[in-house]
Image 1 (cartoon, rainbow over the protein chains, first blue to last red):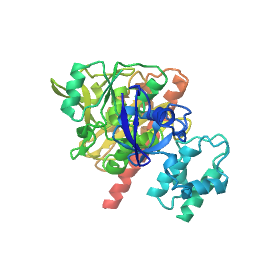
Image 2: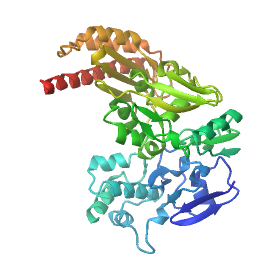
Image 3: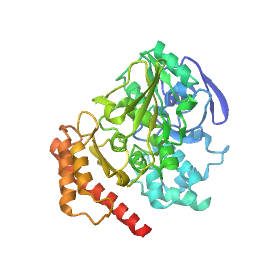
Image 4: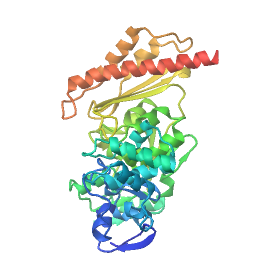
Length: 153
Length: 286
């Protein structure tokens, strides 16, 4: 089937999409947007977190057809040209990135948190990121990054 | 595989009648896992996310089957504290943004987080087909492991719940707070004006189920008219009866013996919290 979806502000079209395919597969393999990562394929790890109509979701759990005529914003859509989003900058500066695999999901999820809660408490940050697994950092630097981004907004 | 995309409830029911093999999908948090891992290959997916009738709730309360957990917590948390507590334990924020009570009911897993609350709070499930609408009490909805009372041409349309008329509590055991399938869970609803108690267990029998003996014992042991601090013996007996209502198995998440023990503890504690809320409320009114 054909799927029409707005991705990062651009009208996109994917053809020959299998009806049982995930939005994540469409983004990565058909639209050339490999920022959202494919790890668990069951919503456990959060690496594929994207905005769907402004709500963060696991792209691996959205059927491609469900994204028809919807708006998707991926990690690729956060920066403005060469200027990183403050959340992305903070991740770099705080050393919250090690292997980098979980980073796109964490960045999108943290981005949403700070949009909703400009000055989150530590428990609020932990709760917001509870569905994003990182096996490198031990999360401390990730928390530093979110606090840093919050302080700059 | 076909991808069916109804835009009204009537259209969805027509499609389900002509394609009973179509698998309904809402938030996708269960269905997509089965597809991604090739555990299931339905001949068609019936996408319900575009059906406006399923995405809203009305006073009463009638909650559309497609209202996600995040909205239940935000919009209905004050009136349905038990359901909101259970909803907060579902998955992660991303999962709660997508997952729905309708999906929990459709999957009918014995471990589904909202089932004990729906049972303890006398929820009624509204299901519909082109033949008409049926109202099914939660206690009659769960038929077996991942089996529910739906006919092949029916869809879950809404859940009916009255706003809490007394304290409600929910408790769940798992290895961490987020992203956990319940080892076992428990819900309690007090109905002070009716002198009644609802109590139900999850993930501790082939289906979620009520604990009727525990409910009857507690209703007779509690003095709703003149609430006083509860003796430990009442809490303990209630816990025992709740535990006895369960028939759990040993599996990867926990042993049957552990589940029985944990249920007794959860029943005792949640009763303590709920009763304390009632006592505090009395004091506030006085």
